[in-house]
Length: 473
Image 1 (tube, rainbow, N blue to C red):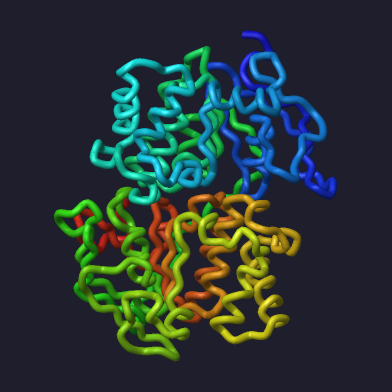
Image 2: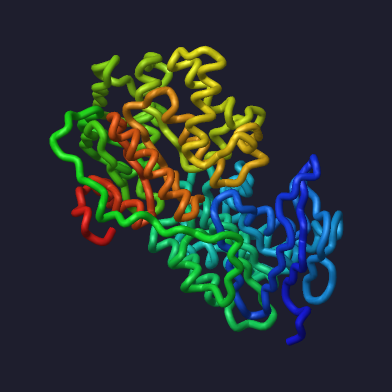
């Protein structure tokens, strides 16, 4: 093996529109048959580094210095670069569901990639189906479009596209961020099968310390990562009044048959409740139903907040301004939630004006303070979502939700794109808000995050079960 085999970056510098340096002096080497992991805090430039390695920096960024080579030759640019990525590179982006075609069944999307990478003949369809099944997507899901899949299922479909045809270079940006432990193991096994093959190179970005320790042969750390706070110091709340009571809630299964979920649920003032369950079990659907974005087949919701107490209408369109203010949802994909034309500070200030009644200047000042508390400085607060990292977008979506004075925060995987230090900062902020009465229902696959909860609920086989907080999820 020569020094120039695999994927190599030497002293690369990436600059922004005004010449501001985004990355400077980075060098790394992904060797044949091995897995290179890139780690570092949210916003440190990991995704920008990946795009620089692949020659596809977004508009406004450019490779100002340094070199990137693949198997001893410069990574091509322009039309040749697009063809190289299409045929040689399996690429899973940080927002995987956004890379899927919304109108096309996921099986057909995997077949299309196999064809681009040279597969022919009648066996292609069977090969695509086998790959999806290997990632835990049963045949009944293969003919669905991405919008009819859960977030974790769509992520695995996007991963199948990246893995299709076993590309010479596989680049994965947070491949397990939205997956439950069982599905994460399936994704890890797909990467593990490539190790030791001298014709294959794998580059992995992840905040999952377990995954990096299990898979990586080499690690390039862009910045130090702090550990999560010891969950043992988190208090368990008892005896507080109910803020949201759900009785007899029934969510129909989109494919028919038995209901996706039948549940009673009570959230108390100031508590954090972790919602666990396998991908596709209905966690996101439950949160969306409570937020008024998914119509249940039956059930009653009662909200008991400072300025609004009484039944909560199922559709959000029928809820009062006070009800909309008091129960807020942060969805699984912040890219879809944030208006691409609005700067971060505008996104957070808007609900302060429309729901909390603040003037323009006070709303902007409070939005900047809240973003700063979450580690988003004034420079990044002035940017639009397309120029922010996935972790920064996630924090902005959380800030927008809690800004107007929510009594209930429905949070869907809000730490999935965050490093350990930023996760701790976000949970610490939620703890401060919980001290003022905020109740949080948090869907997560992160065991460390669940360990900080006052209660843990597991969703399985269409029912909710309370679980001992000290038990392994």
